[in-house]
Image (cartoon, rainbow, N blue to C red; front, side, top):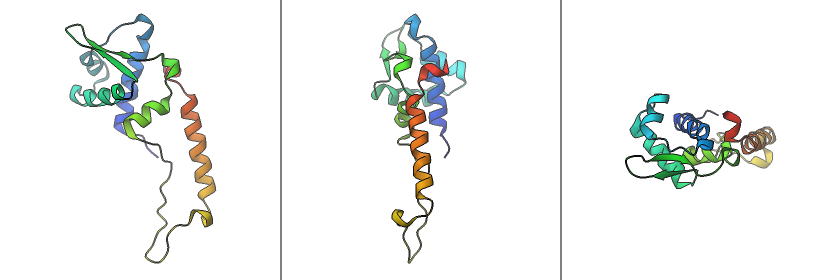
Length: 133
């Protein structure tokens, strides 16, 4: 399992927004882009996804920008990751051949992978954006 650049950059942007949450400050994409060395057009795509999932909100105009839509302690890391990359999957069953298809009921490693999936998912549900600031 490897997190994508979308998740990496999206988390970095969310951390910046979280750091300014208590100041009630609006932050421009250009300032996040410069601070984190992320292409602004790419950042716009990520922020649009986060906005669609109601994790960030925007203000238009000359002094416009973005801020978190809720408190950092109310945003789990799994919300951010799944917003940007979709559901987390620790494994993908690749045990299929021309004459055999993986049967999870008889798979020797399915229990291990399933338990790992549950552990990682629960960890990311419990880990909040506020833990990163």
